[in-house]
Amino acid sequence: MDSPSGEPHMLNIVIDGHAIQVQPGTTIMEAARAIRIEIPHLCYHPELSISGGCRLCVVEIEGRADPVPSCGQACQEGMVIRTQSEQLTELRREIVDLLMADHPLDCVICEKAGKCQLQKYAYEYGLAKTSHKAHVSRTLYQDDNPFFIRDHKYCILCSRCVRACWEIVGANAIEIFGRGFTSHVATPFDGPMIDSTCVFCGSCVQVCPTAALMPVSRAGKGREWEMQRVETICGYCGVGCKIEYALKDGAITYAQGAREESVNGDFLCTKGRYGWDFATSPDRLTRPMIRRDVAYALGLTDEPWQLPETSPLEVRKPKISDSFIETDWDTALNLVADKLADIVQSHGHDAVMGLASARCTNEENYLFQKFMRVGVGTNNVDHCARL
Ligand code: SF4
Ligand code: SF4
Ligand code: SF4
Ligand code: FES
Image (cartoon, rainbow, N blue to C red; front, side):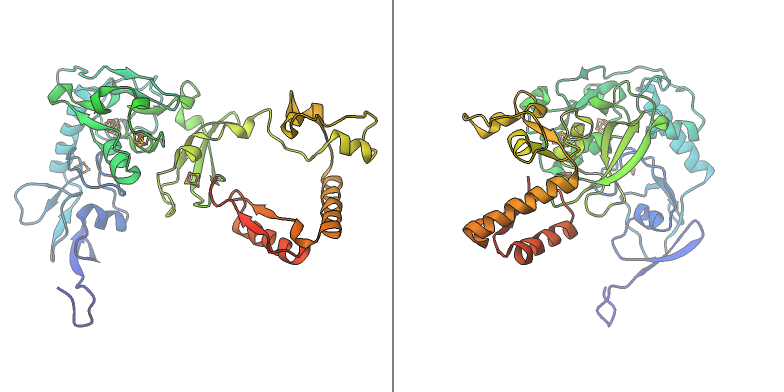
């Protein structure tokens, strides 16, 4: 019910002795996270719908006989909640114990060690092995695409990947298929990823809490704790997603979205997630270059050179240094300025057009349009918007 001011009545609750107010509809998990109380969880993800499948997030509510999963339980006025107790620890320990009964315990060689949430909880509950009869029921290993590996033996069927694919990406490429011990994450008809509606955004890989989905580029590149983390903004389009690169010995091993970032959170498109190999490409241009015939005319080289008549694109073949020479920024920028001035003088201001890039910052694009309008004197300026 709303208050006389039209604002919804806040609910008064107590979590682990902290009295707080929350909006109606807030779950116990969300209320706890808002005051930095971390409730153990595996299937919960803040950007995805509630699954309620793992039950690791159980909490006690005063007046209720049984613990309830906090991720799906909405707060109610006057609730008094406990997130830690001996009973809860025992329940969570048993859940992790059962998951370990159907999971390889090869953390010493697992690529996800140090980042795996099942390993984290096994450590917290002191479980080196399962107390149940161990049997790994899913053994399928699928490396049918260049982006990620599906190693089903590590899957705990939390369904985060399925929900990310449907709710965030809208691709609906994967589903939990089968029943009981045969259940596994699959594409329609269990075919290769390439035959599904997958767009290879890797969102499923990022939300997977275990090593069931792993980037191909990361395989054999080192342990998680050996990797340096570098944050940057994706340069491919104007959305400006925040990316965190994991580097080993200075080379990128994989990219992921930055969870705390409001623009994109955990999620990236295929370009941001997988399109970073240009960073260390030997073909990457890192210095300004001048075409050899122009350089010869300017006296920058003694070797004459002729532009091929077939196609201007021929100047790139077989390698760029055959057709261009390196120069310094002052020489290159002066040359461009002189050529632009010549064109304006001979053919007028509107003979020039500028196309800005989404790879630049807003500030750079602002300066570019200012340069075109005020410097060159034309309104012929546009933007690629999206590559
Ligand atoms: S890569 Fe993206 S589209 Fe493909 S299955 Fe994963 S979430 Fe779905
Ligand atoms: S592949 Fe990963 S995210 Fe998907 S259900 Fe299995 S453990 Fe969960
Ligand atoms: S290209 Fe993709 S990852 Fe990069 S900013 Fe755009 S949407 Fe984000
Ligand atoms: S995190 Fe709540 S049921 Fe899995």
